[in-house]
Every structure is written in C-alpha cells, then in structure tokens.
Amino acid sequence: MLSVLSNWIFMGLLCGASGFALLRGYHLVMNKLNPGSKEPAFGISHILMAGIVGTTLYAQIFSVFGRVNAEAFLVLAAASILYLVWQRKAVASYLTEKLKEFKETQEDAQKAAQEDAQTCDKVTKWLQTGAWGVFLLAVVAFACASCGQTKLIDTEWYHAQTIRWFEEYGCVKGVANIFYSLGFNNAQHYFDALFGMDWLYGQSMRGSGGFFGILMFGHGLFRLTGWRSHEKHLADALAIGEVTYSIIVTAFFTDPYVDTLPNVLVLFVLTEWFILLEKDCEDVREYGLYCLFALFAVVAKTSVAMIVLLAFYPVYLMLKQKKAKQIWVYLGMGFLLAVPYLITNFITTGYPVYLLASLGVLPVKWQVNPEVLRYSVDNMVAFARMPGATMEEALTCGLRWVPVWFQNESISHKLLYLGLVCLILIDLGIVIKHLVKREEVDMKYLFPRLCVYAGLVYWFFTIPQVKYCWAFLIAPVAMVPVYYWEQKEGKHPLWQKGMVLLGVLLCLMYCGFYSLRTLGYMKDALTYPVMQADYKQFDMGIAEKNGRQFYVREEGKDLTCGYYLFPYLENKDDLDSLVFEEDLGKGFYIEK
Image 1 (cartoon, rainbow, N blue to C red):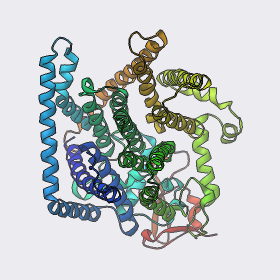
Image 2 (cartoon, rainbow, N blue to C red):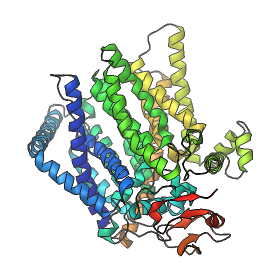
Image 3 (cartoon, helix red, strand yellow):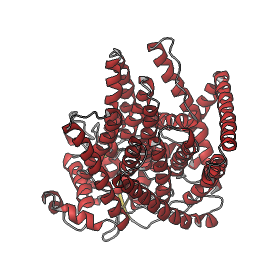
Image 4 (cartoon, rainbow, N blue to C red):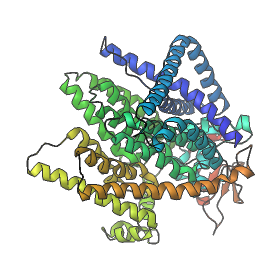
C-alpha cells in the first residue's frame, strides 16, 4: 500500500507541474486573442486533469524516440523542476490565492452555519467540516484497494504486455503483427509505463486507476460541500455521479484498466460544463478548454467518441460573438492533441486509427493484415452482444441479439438500463411536447443531454459492455431528475417525485453495493502493506527463430501471458513468416 501512495505522490507532483504549465500556456494564447480579458480561474482538479493529459502526451511522444522508463521519467522530472523554479513567483501567487480562498470558504461556511442554525441540518454541517476527513479516508481506502492481485483477464491477455513493450522499447513498428491486441493503442498505457517505475520499485507499478479515481472522488466531494450556496444543483447531481463512479471502479484499481481515464474525463467535463451554464457563462475559453479535455477522452478510448459533440456549443458562441477565426485556433489545439495518438497508431499497426481498416491508405510493409483487424473488431462486437453465440450469428441476426444481451446482464445493470430508458423517454417526450406546442426549449441545457444520449446510442450499437460507458450511463440518472425538479417551484407533480426517487435509488444501489465490494478488496492491504502485489506468473510454451525466444500459448490453455512472459506471440504458426531483427525495437512485419 505504501508503494501505491508514494507513486501517487510522484503522479501528483509531475501532473501538477505539467498541468500548471499547460493551463498557463492555454490562457496565454487565449489572452492574446482576447486582449484585456480576465483570466478564468482554475482549481487544483483542473491542473491535475491538464497534467494527466500533458504527461500522457509527453509519454506518447517520448515512446516514438525511446523507451518509456527511467529516462522518460527523469527527463520529465528535471523539466518540471526547471519550470517551477522559472515560474516560482506565479506558482507562489497561485498557491497563496488558493489558500486564501480555502480560508474564506471555511469562514463563510461557519458563519452560515451560525446564522442559519435552525435550517442547517447535521448532514450539511458534516459536509462543511468533515470533507477533508472523508477525502483522506478515501485516499487510504483506494490505496488499499489498489495494492492486491490483478483481477481482469485483459490485464494478463494484453494490457501488461503493452505496458512492458513501452517500458522496454517504446513505440515499436508493426508490433501488432506478433499480437493483434497490442494495436489497441490506449493512451492510458503510456501513462502507466511512465509511472510504472520498475527501476525504482523493482517491479512495474499499477497505480494509475486509483489516482484517477481519487481525483474524481475529490472533485465530486468538494463540489458537494458548497451545495447550500448553489442556486442550481445540476452540477451537484453530477458530482454525486463522480463519487459514485469512483467507488464503482475501485474493483479495477489493481489492474491497468484503460476505461477509467476516459470515463473520468467525461464526468469531469459534464460537471464543469453545467457549472458554467448555471453561471450563465458565455466565455468561449472556458468551454473550449473542456472540449479539449473531451477530445483527449476520445484519444484515450474511442468508446466515448460522442462527447466531442459538445464542441458545437463553443463554435456557436464564437460565431455569435463574431470570433470565427478562433475556431481555427481550437482546431489546431485539437490537432496537436490527436497527432501523437495517430502517429503511435501508425507506427504500431500501419493505420492512423487501428479500428478503421479503411484508413490504411499508406501501404507500409509493417501494416497489419486488414482481415486480422476486421476480425478483432467483429470479435469484440460479437462477444459483447452474444457471448455464447458464433461470431457470424451475433453479427447477422439483426436486433435479435438485444434480448440475449439483456438477459446476460446482471440484475443491477438491468435495473440501471430500465431506469435510464424511463428517464430518457420522459425527457425526450417533454421536449417533443414543447416543440409541438411551439413552447420555448432551453437548448443550453438540452444540448449536453442530447450529447450524452448520442453517446449511449453509439455505445449500444458498437460494443455494449457497461465498462466502456459508465459515464454516459450515470449522467442521465443525475441530470434528468434534477433538471425537471428545478424547473418547477413549489409543489412537484408525482412523476417528478418518481424520477428523483428512481435516481436516488439507483445511486444508493451502486454506491452501496460497490462500497461493500471495496471494503472486501481493502483486506488485500493486510497482505501487501508496503509493496503492491506484483503481476502474476504463468507457464507457457516457447518458440524460437533466429536465436530469439517467444512465449506462445499451448493448446487448450487460456489467453494469458501477463507481464513477465515477454515477448508473447499470439499464433505460433506466424513465426515462419514473421520478419524481425535481433533488436526487437526495430519492428516486425509479416512476409507476404
């Protein structure tokens, strides 16, 4: 456990320095485009989120030129120290301002509690005074949940191998030719490799999921402590969703689980988006920053692709404010975020986006066979829809897979899906009713809800596994009941009370169930109080070519190779046609 906590300190320091630099650079560019405008305020969570983006991009770029290991970490650490020394006055000023804001918040909370003692209930007082204690307990609990043995099959199947490749060689040309799953270029694995730090701990660490989780927990918790001062509570409801999600994913903190980061980013963006709407903010710079975060969420995992639809709102504002030229600036920033992802994809697979074989327009010799790529995509879709059926049946049965898929889901997921359908149908029904009657619809609040619904539709018709879509599944439960509750003053109709009750029950169900599971996983801290459990060891066959050994799966055994059986070759028969040099970092290709 202590190794996990110490690694989080390294993550926090380097992400903090990187995020501070990126946000200052962002606002510097924006202030040049809007001379004399006031710089938007940003909090610690904004800095850390920006830092996660910055360090991941750095690791991606570094992987093109060398391995993401001690040298990558030390270069980043040295650059961060130099930047903080150079900008020490700005850093000191920011920290002083935040400390002042914290003291003022505490004083205001105590004053409000004294002046309004009759209506300030015990829960509110507890939130105002005990949030830091709760947060520290969560840090310990999440660290405990992070230190046990790995649990997910994907970790031993290809996630651990992917991280090992980055640590040993960096981004390797055509590496997906020895194992097609190595082409799933998840951005989080670069972050995992950067902070794996096997050179320091003696084993590669897996603490990133817990770090993202505690950041999400803190962002939601501290938003809720000020709920009495908020005129509207849509963002507060989403903050509850953030806390809920951070508890849900504690089960996966022991693994380099690649779906945490994109879902964390989506929930963070939606919460901050509604904070801006509730302030009637029309500052393009603030919305634009969250659109960049949303784009990076897509780079981290394409399953959340629909969140980028939010970008249409700042585009609308720029056109409305006659600042159309700034659109090109944001497009340029978005391009810079996407370029490392596209380049590393192309190096490892021969495709700028691995899942889209049609984009393989440059016929490089290390390009993965498009049939292999299509098979891998079809296999994921078929397994998500009908796990027990053949691929052909799952892909050609029309919508007949839907009842089979629903039946295979857990009871808690079924309840969540049914609740979501009810909430979304009520929401869309009311909107349609307003449009038919030609009544005004508040598009500022409707548009982000429609973006979330689009994300759900995209998820459902691609790979409908709950782990890919938690953010979009949680968001409507928070948004819809609270939105309609706030639209009506006084006595609320029964259907509104029903929506709020449904949302509360779903939230309590997931928080309660997963909190109990988290307590169960915390017992691992007793077994691993100092050092996190290492990756598991497996027995596998060995194949040789040109004096180089590859580990291969023996007939009848599971798809498990883990971290230490390296490198792993998926198909032993491919070895005859596989071309590589003695230095595996030079790359692979299949001889035609």
